[in-house]
Structures are given as C-alpha cells and as structure tokens.
Image 1 (cartoon, rainbow, N blue to C red):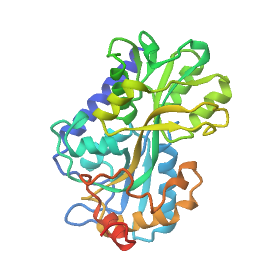
Image 2: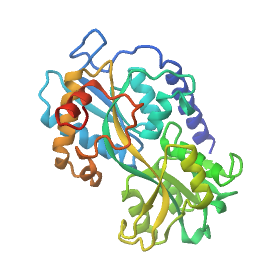
Image 3: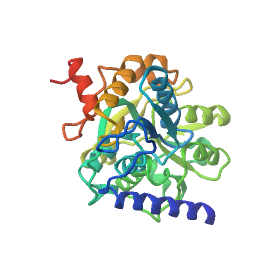
Image 4: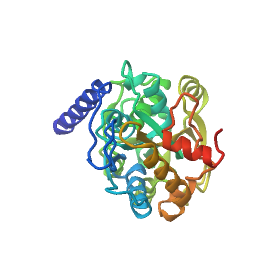
Amino acid sequence: MKKRTLISFILVLAIGMILSACGESGKGSGSSGGGDKGETTNLTMGTGSVGGVYYPLGGEMANLWKDNIDVKGFDVSSVESGASVENIAKIQAGKYQLGIAQNTTMVNAVNQQGEFDGKEINKVGVIGSLYPEALQVVTLESTGIDSIEDLKGKKVAIGPPGGATREAAELVLRAYGIEKGDFTAYEEGFGDAKSKLQNGTIDASFAVVGVPSSTTNELASASGEVKFLNIEGKALDKIVEKSKYEAYTVKPGTYDWQKEPVQTITAMALLLASTDQVSEDLGYKLTKTLYEKSGNMTIAQAKLITKDGALTGVSDDLPLHPGAEKYFKEIGLIE
C-alpha cells in the first residue's frame, strides 16, 4: 500500500512539473525533419494504461502510419501513459508529438480549467475524433453493491492520476455526495483494477473506455458476475449541467452477457498533435491515412473512426492542427 501511494505521489508530482513547464518550448524526441519550430518526423505518441483502449489503439495507429506514410526519417512510437491529462501536458512540453485524450479534458486544457488551471496550452491541435467513450462503473454481484451511493466506505479504483477516468470518477462521486475520504481510493490502471476487483482487493472500478471493453469482457468471463452501476436521476442531470459529458445508454447486447441497458455518461476520444513539432504536411498525411485507411486496423473501435464522424465532439473553441484542417477542407467537412 505504501509503495502504491509513493508511486502515485511521484506520478502526480511529475505531471505537475510537466504542467508547470507548459508555457516553455520543448525539443522533440527525434531529430529528423527539423524546422524553425523544432519539427520532427520521429514521433512519440502517448496512449493510456494497459487494459484500456488507448494503449492497443495507439499501437495499431502507429503501425498503420508506418505502413502507409513515406517520409524520410518517419517513425512513430506509441507508449503507455497516464492518458488524457498527461498526454496533453507532454505534447505542450515537447515530450510527446502525438497523444490520445478525451474531448472534455482538451476543453479544460484550452480554457485553463481543472488540472490545467492557469496553464497555457497553445501548442496542441486536434487531428480528429476517434470514437465515443462511456464511463463504466463496475462491481461484482457478490459485493452486494447496488448503486453508486453504496460506494461510500468502499474500496474503489478511480483511475491513475493524469487520466480522464480519474476526473470523471471524482465528478460522479461528488454528484452523489461522496467526497474524498468517504471511500478508499485505488489509483489503478484498467488492467490492474480488473485483477483487484476479481480477487476481492477492491469493491468497484471506474473506467472511461470504449465499449465493448475487452477488460470488462475478461472480467465477466472470469467471474461470471459483473454488475454495472447506473448514473441516473438528479446526479446525472448535475453532471451533464456542470461538465462537457453527455448522457449515454449502453444498449443491451453491447456485451453478449449484458441483458439490461446501462445509463451512464459519454465523451469523445480525440487524437491530438503538436502544432510546433508536427508539420502541416505531416499532420495532413497522418489525418488522411487515419480516416481513409482505418479499416486496415483490427481493434473493434477502428470501425467507428470515419471521415463523417471526424469532428464529432470537436467544439468551436478547440484548435485543429493545420494539417488536419487542410484535409478536412479538402474533403468538404469544413469550409
């Protein structure tokens, strides 16, 4: 327990240091293709924790680009990270050139809210939308937990620092009157949370993830007793009113074993790129390849990455990467 707390403290401290440097220019991880703004063709992409969708999707996107983009010195390395907050902060600081993040987190970054309070984010542009994500609050039948209100006094995985799951979990718990100290928080990635829920170390887990989630399916296969907790009523209304999340229903049959609808909240996963280190030309090639060849990827969420949905959840106040803007104008998606 002490070791996990120390690791979490170090991660929070590291993200804080990254955010404090957000106004400074950084050098990229590669040296090819350099320009006045430190442009590079050797790209590092922040994804998320093992067990979520960001991590395997990032690997598939990296391979898709490497198979289809012919640029001198071009390479993409996808790396595990704390997800949305960390990815945006590290793109701004020049540590990553690409990253996946929730649109709600990107809105906070642009407006200097939440984790980005007082931090200028001006070197991060949107490549486009990927797929909708749903917050899944999961427990097991054997815990006797029937609602989010029942999580008071329980052991709950709320996601690692630096991820959108952590932000969403705290938002939902507050809407139900559950504050820090009312429960024991476990700062776990999706894979670790699944294992701890299965062996009884924790009582419930929050995960903002694409549906269906392979991690949730694995838990259901292993335990045979997965239960979703609904976000509904006045708490749901409060969350939608005070955030960029929207109400969402996970329809019966989304998982083979799911018989009842699940009421929750949703946001869009976005692909982001450095406007300093990823040139307009390379950004154009990344965007065009992603939306025209997404069918070459095998992950389930790839079928949701389409030209028609490329700007879903991208509000007017979110800056597009110049290369993405060029592509979307070319196909008539924007004027």
